[in-house]
Length: 244
Image (spheres, rainbow, N blue to C red):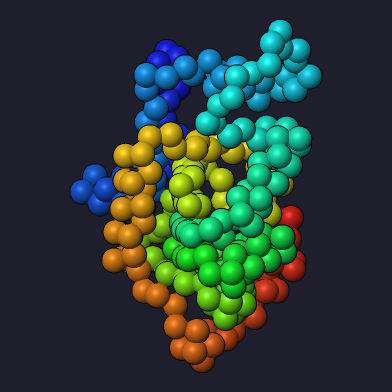
């Protein structure tokens, strides 16, 4: 946030790797949003609370409803996680996910499978190659159950996918949150629920455009050629449960 007038948030890091190849970067695929012309007081208050560890700070009046989604306390993490599961379970038409580190816990996995079986269009874009080399292996542990339930999985090719976005019907989210245990239960994250119709349309268009750089997962081919990747991924999830 700059001068309480503008804020930027999303999946990008302050790193050369995120720069275009023309600027000697690796052209990582990220999604971010710039927020202007809105009241950013709630962001300022919550940033200070998180930064200064003022988790018991008394606020003179309740914070106004905000499209920002904070998670710097255990209560907030529980709230955001429960809200996400509720939205997935109540989805009627669409669940489109782009995520760099997709290692769902049982509740999230069950919710996605159930939504797909109910006829919701569940599509997930994930990295074929990651900056953390074993993440695609860990993600692949869940592919069999997801695809057999009707979920379509697309693997982003050629460059690192680092974006974290979520579309559930008319609700859309951009931020830093991963769909893994570490992010949902431990890490400090910030997300934003898009408010403008044109922004939501842009995110949907970006999702469809990203699919052009993807290869859709063929479960039969996957089971034949990447069996050990899935086995190793499952072992890593068991050994590193708290960290992935």
